Length: 511
Image (cartoon, rainbow, N blue to C red; front, side, top):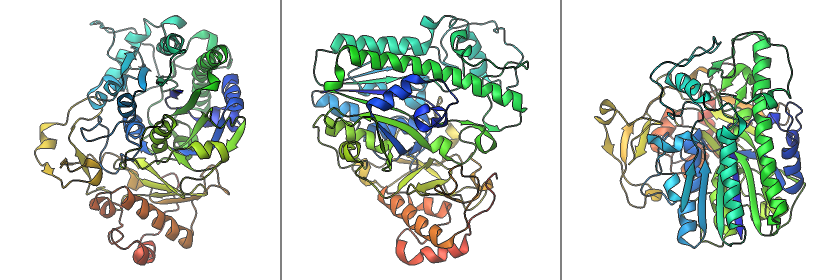
């Protein structure tokens, strides 16, 4: 048995034909849907990039206990477990966060790994002199912006592009090992993450009139640009997505060529979506985790069931991927993992949960049952108390500062830390989630999440599910206080009504 996980970054399913869109030319995604079970209710868990990857390894939520960071010493890592049980694991990726301070322990959990350089602001090529940068609408022109323009100077032909090289090396691994048994390949590209940089062959698929300044990398935040510029970014994103589709097709071709469908699981998904003007926002993190970010595409082929060309409505999440892969290779699933194997869901749409929790550290804590989405905002503008529980005190690309560490404490162990006491460090509350207030949406009546719902009875049930899932994940007590849920920690059933009456849902969806 073999398995391949093709992982894209920032893939907005609103652009994919299998999800009813004609915004992008992506015939290979349609072809993929014909060969797999397509999931309509797959949700993120912990956001953004590396928190999601910790879930891929550990099969449990990350965001209630800490923010961005490496694998912890007590974490039980899916690829490492596979390797210890005779399944060879290999990672090919151009995702630059793996070789930053906040992600440096993930790729070393695989038996072997290969990195491709040059995406976004990856500090790859060294130029002392500033590169030539065109006039642009983008306001945030930090060191990533400068480095990206250095890198683009070396990415002028398609074979040089990081995505092309990533898939080339992934296909090389498949060719080399097709005749072997018991291996797992994670083939991961940073695209279509911003900047939405592609070459002319893909841009030509989307002819349109645009005469403004350079614009393929919107700032995170509210959309302030003219419609022509917004439309232009949509075309730039679609062009890059068509490039993703092209290379996905190469994987499908290889599976056809080598008849891998007989004994190889294929999973294709993304870590999260990307807002392209929906709800009036670009990017992520600034705004609540609306469905263009949280409800992600997922396609699974399991050769044991043979389910293809079928839809699945069951509610699934990122925490399910680790146990799914362990079960597929007949490897025991650690009791610290909270996700569920999806074998029977792929086969017959068997549900694995009633509700799913998702969010980002310090932001809204969200729950969905597939029909409603409830977004619980911080109770105050201060967004406190908030702590990081970690033995690996690093942010995305830098270590925790001295001032951050001066007030740390030792926390009592959680069950999943296996008797280990972590550092308890005051967390950064840079998110402005309180500005948006608490939100409730009826997805059946309002799939675009444009009209917040006022329904005390529904909110009561959603709060109950939210708190139950927080308890199940051993959320630290201060998370309940931060969210205005004090008292729910021990008495979910009896105090829900009082909570609802004291904290009504906001009616302002745009903050």
